[in-house]
Amino acid sequence: DNTNGCISAGPHFNPNNLEHGGPTDSVRHVGDLGNVEANAEGVAKVTIVDKQISLGGSNNIVGRTVVVHAD
Image 1 (tube, helix red, strand yellow):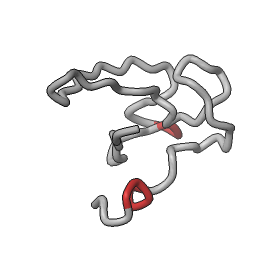
Image 2 (image 1 turned 45 degrees about the horizontal axis):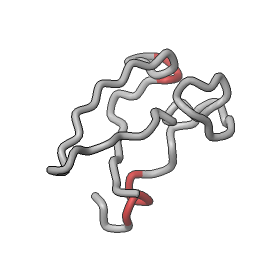
Image 3 (image 1 turned 90 degrees about the horizontal axis):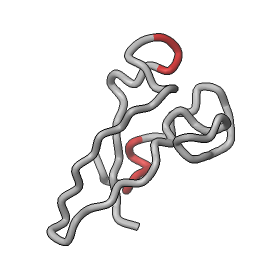
Image 4 (image 1 turned 90 degrees about the vertical axis):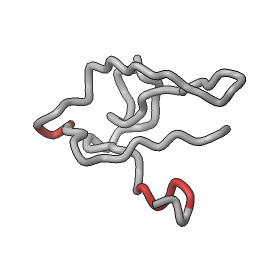
């Protein structure tokens, strides 16, 4: 649901109540996964390897939304 832009997806995933950061920063939202770049045709191929997100426990991303937007 993008009715209200990114707001519809909810806030960044931040179970530890930390500040925003880059994907390699030790202090960051768990959901701060970095930027995605598309080619001239608008296609973006993405692989994310991350040490904080998981498929279980407090950093579980199962059922969460990934939002990609321009600018």
